[in-house]
Amino acid sequence: MSEQAAYAKPLPVVTAEDREFWAAARRHQFLLPRCRACGHVWFPPYASCPRCLSFDRGWTEASGRGSVWGFTVMRQPYIPAFEADLPYNVVLVELEEGPLVYSNLVDIDNADIACGLAVEAVFEDVTDEITLIKFRPAGL
Ligand SMILES: [Zn+2]
Image (cartoon, rainbow, N blue to C red; front, side, top):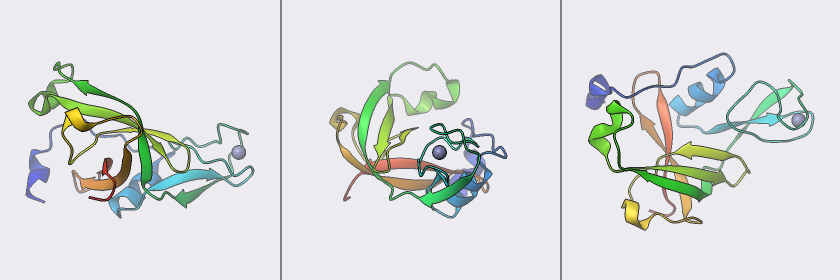
């Protein structure tokens, strides 16, 4: 992708805890940690289950579907790398599987964002190593 060389925004630092998550995102697959002991699904992908504290972690593929739980529209350049995007949205999406995920909504005017809006995941390849998971209104 030609824009990759120009990508100058902060990138996630991949750790041992979330390496599988980011590798899956690169394949355009949205994986969530799932506890083999109690079945709980959580995000972000910490090593242990936040419900029962088991380290017996597996993975389950998320449907990618969810709804807007909350959002804000950033209008001040708090982070210089995002200044050219102002005003931009930050949303908290409640996934069908339960976890809440911070992201951005794409393919929508900020004025049309509302809590409860049905959304679906989209994958944005920003570098050769990192693919970000964003959301757009469902059914586009
Ligand atoms: Zn558990």
